[in-house]
Length: 517
Image 1 (spheres, rainbow, N blue to C red):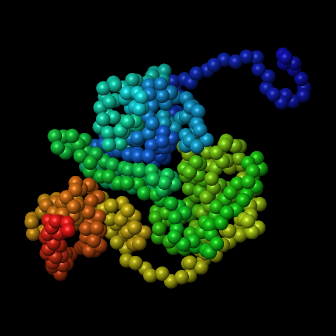
Image 2 (image 1 turned 45 degrees about the vertical axis):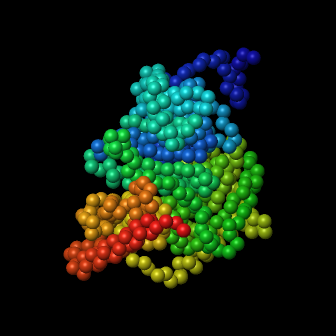
């Protein structure tokens, strides 16, 4: 019916027609400025790999002559054909997501990538289609959303390069022109990558910890493309991301926990809250190495087993020092709702008053109120603060060359010296009467590469090989760094350690040469 003017309030806005308004090319600028942090952007791309049923994923940094060139994410998921690639690269395209999918809005791939890189390339193949690729650039978006077709010969070459991961199917996502990489001065790539990889490892280990605990293999590697035999490249660092479980304590901070509470939330129904209390003064990585303890108290929201918020009380209360042991796991409903909504970057949940009202009514199976849980967490914190604790001497932190699992345990057990450069481990050329040497100017322990095979059982060693040998040397030599005057007694100690370790090499060689009985 045509609209008739009236003095009464019009509850529905009357319209006279419609027109389609496609996005202006200037939208590309907004797409590339979504505020994605580097780790959050990489995690968003890995979500796509998990949705593609990948169980093996590698985040690969490529560098050449000291410059960091490119970032790639490689997976062995089901891959995409030409039609799938076109859909994936269409700005604003939202595919049909299953209830178990990690993807939601259809913008993450483009927005996360172009927030950090000037060029996004995807190369993929399925079991039934050949390798194909598409490239999207900021300039292409400005040119009426132009998407480039990758030369199929290069697409196949790239897939073949990663045949240890991509066997019959899989995908490579490539970032070029990464703005953070372009700011790294020559000679500083090692330092930049060390910090960037440590942050990325922590973020992925935390937000994907349930998947990692179920067997997802997620690695971070660095490749020098211009080195190695015949210039084919050489892997210089490789770590396996381990789960950082924010609820992974061995013994709870108070008996009777974890405990389930049920919150009646209007518009949503009953919502389960699994309340945990960490033991006071825990040194476990899942407690101390995932950020500020004050910021990490509160709610941990999961969507399809993927962590999407790590801490915070969402306006229900303010964070307090005596509640740092309190963490609550909440699995979001799989269906969309108007009470709990997730932002595009998947790092924060927005709640309505219905959620906080439900918390005030939440009880456990015995009728105990949710606020009693907070009182228990505060009591556990205060009781723990009164206990006497042996203070361990701070150490210079371990660095590159030592297995990440070992480094994590060292950080759990020993406090670090503030401002000290990490101790690195490398294999180098040393005299035959020397098993190891020190480069105190660069905080490095150099192991004699002539003996490398003996501590790797003849197998090819990686950047983090011989973990037992390197760990023992770290414990022996840690206090030899960061000193002023070098004492003769300290040098004498290094000399006899070298002599004893050389004899252990000979013993190891003898045992390897003996036939198995």
